[in-house]
Amino acid sequence: MYAELVVDEKIPACRLIILACQRFLDMRRMAAETGNEFYWSDEHAIEVCAFIEQLPHVKGVLAKQKIRLEPWQIWILIAIYGFRWADTGDRVVTIAQLEITRKSGKSLLAAGIAHYELGPNAHIGDDLYIIAPTAALALKVLEPMKKMVEFTPTLKEHYAVTDVSDRITFHETDSYAMILPASGKKQDGHDPKVVIADEFHSLPASIFNVMKSAQGARPESLFLEIGSAGYNAFGVGWDERNMAIEVLEGKRTRWELFAAIFTIDQEDFGNWRSDIVLQKANPNAGISLPLRKLRQEVDEIFTSPRNKNETLRTRFNVWGLGEGKLISRDQWDACLDKDLTRRLFKGCRAWAGVDLASRNDMICYVILVEMGEDIVPFARYYVPESGPWIEDEEVTALYMHWSSEGYLTFTPGSYHKYNSLLADLEADLEYFDVEMIAVDDREANAVMAVLEGKGHPVVAFRKNATNFSEPTKDIIARTTGRVKGLRHDGNPILAWNVENTIGGYNTADLVLPKKIAPNSNMKIDGFDAAVQANACRLQLVEFKDEKRKPNPMAERGVRVME
Image 1 (tube, rainbow, N blue to C red):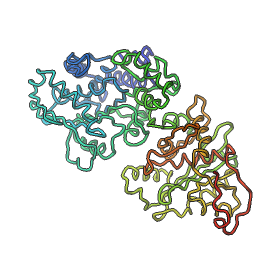
Image 2 (image 1 turned 180 degrees about the horizontal axis):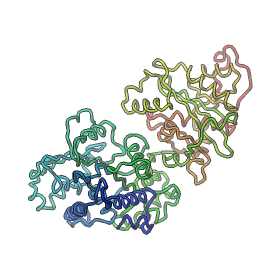
Image 3 (image 1 turned 120 degrees about the horizontal axis):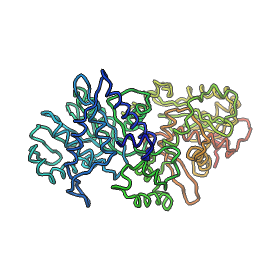
Image 4 (image 1 turned 90 degrees about the vertical axis):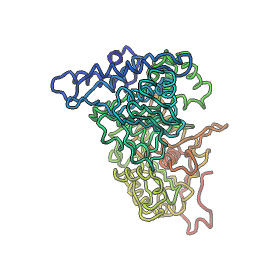
């Protein structure tokens, strides 16, 4: 059995797949115990596999040939369908999260599950919806379903299947499969038994939440989440993944959830050419994915570095590596030290960066503390309670959650007066031994006047490639190397900022961190502030200990590091 071979380390697998297989085996043992709340059904486990193996491949050299399930696919299917509740006989698993690298047959497997749910496993009126970020992506599941019907006359005849536009109907069971658009605003009122969420990492929260709640009354509902790693490690997909990992790690008990996350481990970073690492993230390596082709893809990381992030995302399921992403979420999370608190560093040497980029949205400051050879950032964030962020549903949900957790301060009004930030910064300047403060020069004058008036060493800092490149490279090196030189306390807003930061190297090998798009709500303020503080630490800014003159703008203007 696949799960036993994985746990016995006879098949290369990442930590999360090993945990999933061990959990499956533990559930099998529990199911055999008298009086347990769920049992194991060979009949249900075998039936779904046998049915799908009667369906055909739909393209390529195997088109029209019957599917032959691989051991890892059989494990997924029996884990979803084999466990049954003792009191009702209903399926235990109602949420299945499958994070699988590209070209591994995940859409074909989803199409097979869809046919099974509309045919042999259907009750009258069991409907199925396919949701995805775009209609084109949703077709990646519906089109194989259509081809399976076309290539299997017995299926079409037995269930009286008709195929019209974006809908497949099984008249025998009065059930159908159809695509729903990504916008969830007008999708209330549905009662699906099955939802297939393709590329779930990019799904808008609106459609995801609507379809989740729509299944509430269905005892044998199935919410099938399929896809590969996301460009950005935040949003619904990332939250679902983290919840699944907590279940696999035993931090939560949710028998109704099954998760198979094929990725790599932290120690595998850099070993891209290893066949074992390739097999961990690609369960069909050497089958539908020839190892020779996989090696060629990986070689492009070295011959064409601009393709590196996309290759790591789609071939190794490394999250948060969109175009130009400087630091992946996995790399940032590897620097987490949950024992770190401000209380440990009273009086310690530190530097500060203050980002004031937006007068009516997020602002922040970062205290960068020295810890031996490591650096530790502590961040504080502020947004005006009536700022434009309230127009963005997803950002609003994030801000409200962070505020409730104590990571974000709402300030009165619709724009910043900096009172809250300055009060907290003053307290931190007294607590830490801050050698220098770099302030974003775009809104620097008012804040600098207050800080200089109280005798603090402060300098305006202009964001350009010359100023930002070296301190940015230092942070990248400390977070992406095998030996970590940065530790953090897990501030979720700072992690979000890091996630949102992209950048490219110019011909002079300078890098400038920036947002995904100029007007994007995906903020990078904390990363910018950390870079500013790091520039101070690296002594890349010059401070002149001079008295602030009565009218600095008239006499010399804001001091700027050119």
